[in-house]
Image (cartoon, rainbow, N blue to C red; front, top):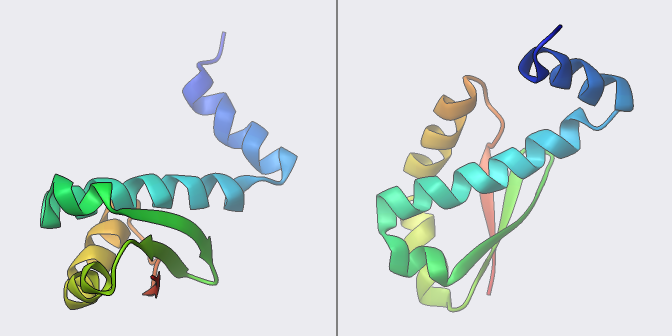
Length: 96
């Protein structure tokens, strides 16, 4: 009997939803990375919305939060890409 860990990637690919699954995993990774870099307070006031064309769109409750994220943008992007061992995010886009 095969393990789910080996079967799941094949099923996802066959269903044609691998990009959507990867996008959801990137959103989750973003939250974890931002919490580690900027703290839980910031994480509570921002929300990653979607990933499109390697641009991660993030909603921020204030322009100050967006600016703080922008200052740490490269560090956040590098941490996410390291987690996936490839370039999945090239830039962040902020909505306030």
